[in-house]
Length: 211
Image (tube, rainbow, N blue to C red):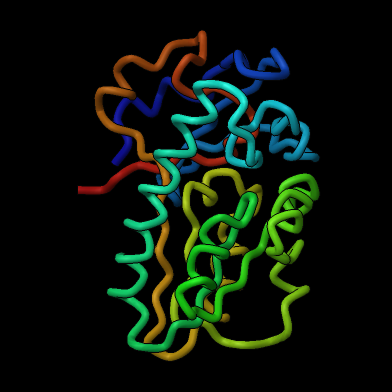
């Protein structure tokens, strides 16, 4: 269970983009922290020229280092997905960014699709011959052996509904793989009103690792 729940709601400042003040509220039934109010337009917190996972540039040293790290992670993710696909290489990347993982797996003979609501990221993917879908509903009905959300869940305003939809798109025996940040005891103890750890309203939910 989350410690020091009486500290919430906690007012924090978005240091990254908007400089807005928002609240982190504790949701008892789910044992999570949730941004309140949930932003009406999440895309506003991901500026097109300053959100590196939606870019495909190598203009700066940071861009080049990110590209090296991304390529390393693509190989690791492919190994993980191979382990969980039960021999059926039908994959959906939900929150696919610029489509790097979708393309990587397609080149390895996977049936690989991606959902990315951000139009700028979809355009960058298209420049690299990778067609991404704007929503799960826009994909022809089918079942997947593996669906992944790589640091996407915490950005979803209605993550419970989305998870139900994704579970419904799994084939029998399919796997839903989720990577997301968790609140450690150290983070709880150092969480300050400055919001240096909980940085911006684009993160709608922060999850706690249960023992």
